Length: 515
Image 1 (spheres, rainbow, N blue to C red):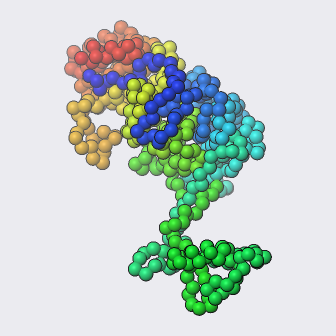
Image 2: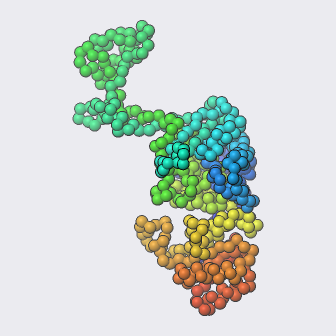
Image 3: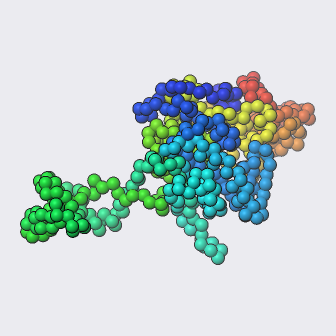
């Protein structure tokens, strides 16, 4: 029954500080930091986790904190199960800034003096965020405001212009920071207009560039070349060397010589502060994970390439589905992720395993060839406190199942278990959803001290509708009436319900219950 085992429900030992790690085969030569462990996903409030990091240990920080105007703010206070709803936008913005300020102070503390900081937000609070960041990092540390066109306007906003972009504020800790300029390829129209020439017998395009000097007061550069006297950009010796290489052409006698500038030798168009070339993650795209605020991998790769070097440490303190971590791993950087959501931590761990092809393994991590997840809730007390939908996801994944994407309208089924024997050799176009497979067991989860008979009755009805012969129920405990009903249901309908407690899952007593 190994299908039901899942490492993330096991108690985790505190992270050990190491002074030396062997680099992964994907990592370039270089020694990871001796100050902080990397390739770790921490589950918990980032304010608590950041306080454990030493000063000035991170090279690049990217964060994309959640902000949903006029919606419940349970994401910010989920750890206390408190839900706050705000009618007034100003009040909600103030709450958001008050939540973010101490976290940004900690982020500034852990950033190296040569480090860079990117804050991703939208129009709801961007102006307030800018003021807050100026106060924390200093106005002179602000580099630019990046505008990312995330969607095309789908319709006309009511008496306004549609909001179709996000803002990314870019700060550095000092004037000495890493910046690797990024380039975009030239458009076809630009190439056709400005690179009209090709070498005979080839497809290699070039343009003819000016060799004259805009500064006319340069006696040392004033001379005759190919019968033409001008103030040139280069010395006569360099001009002659370039001409001998066939890179200077003269269309006819007396014409001003010009320089061949080949298209394939040009870096392209420098990326500026308007990013309209990276599309958002679509619902059906190959990259999509079903995460509502998922950012495209190309967006994070651009930021990481621009503001870090191989083996630098990248931190995302609101890492959600782990796009920044996957980009950092793919580009040969060290990384640290933090998120308060246990579900998000498992989603990003699965993404790193499946997409980045690194293993979640304690022993491999100690040798620099794997990653680990720390501080996931694993006590009964902790699991009682997390939000209900998080608890549902925890229970379903702990059983080796797949949670429902929708949190409402699930018809009494919170997830499904697909036995290994049910998986075909080729999944085809439907792979990932597994809806094409008819062999599955329903899971129902209740975050209750004692699930009662009405809860069991509801699950029995769901099993009858789905025509399932076996199902799994998870709660902290069960009333005697609930257990009696499970027994009656089996004797009358020949359908079994496996009643599991949270304690049994945590103590890995599943083998006995599922045998």
